[in-house]
Image (cartoon, rainbow, N blue to C red; front, top):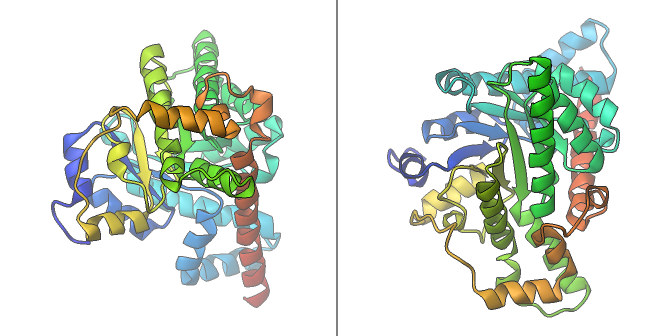
Length: 355
C-alpha cells in the first residue's frame, strides 16, 4: 500500500469529511496517517489485538510489572491499555497540536462492565483523560452513559458516545454534550479543546436487522437491509446540520459491502478499519461523495413498515434513553466488548503465569 495518490489521499484532499483509522495497532495508524488520517477509534476488542501483535514488547513490560509486585491481571491489563494509548496518541499528537486540538484524537473506552454505573465510568474517565491531552473517552450511549458524558463535559473532558446505532441515540449524545458545555462555561472551565463525537455503528445496525429478518422470516431483500445504516446516517446528519449541534457525528463499523461514497461529503468523521482500507485500494474503488443523494422513498417505507427496530433507530422519538440499553444491537455489541475486555485480561493473566 505505497500508492502516493490512493483513494484516501484523494478523499482527504477533496472533502471536509475526516478520515480516521479504526484500529489500535500503531503500525496501522502510522500508515493511515500518511494517507491523511487525523484520528483513531479503538474499542475493547481492538486492544487485545494490538497487544498480541506487539507480544514481544508486552512480554517485557508485563514481566517488569510482575517484578514490581503488580500481579493483578486487571491492573496490569490497564497498564497495557495505557501503553498502547500513549503510543497511539503520540502518533496523532502532531495533528492535535497543528489543529489546536480540533482533531488528532484517539478514543479509549472505559471498562465495558461498568456500562450501567455512571459514577464508575466517570471515575475511570478522569484517570484515562490524564494519560494524554488528545484522548477521547468512549462511553456507552445508554442512560448511565449519557449521565457520565454530561458530567465529564462539565469538567472539560472530551468524550465519544459508542454502542450507538440510530437517530435517538446521537441526539441524546448531542443534547448531553450541550448541557455539559453550558455547565462548564458557568463554572469557568476552558472548553476551547473539549470535543464530543456521536457514533453511528452503521454495519452493526445492518447486522442486527439482518438477524431479525432471518429469525422472523420476514423475507426482506438483502440489498434493502444493506441500506439501513445509510438511511439512518443521512437523517442524523440532516438533523445535526439543522440544529447546529456542536457534537460531531462519527461513522464506523463498516462492512465489505459498504461503498464509502455513500458516507462521504460533509463535516463529520468516517473511521475505516485497515482491512477495508486495503480492499478499497486493491479494488480501485472510485472516489465519490453521495451522502446527500436521497434514498428511494419506497425503500424507506418498506424498512419502516416491516422492521420495528429500524423504526426505533430511524425515528427521532423511536427510543427513550432508558430504552437504549435494551436495544438489540446495543446488547449484542456490549456482549462483544465485554468479551474483548475479558480476552485482554486473560491474555495478561497467561503472560503473568508464563513469565
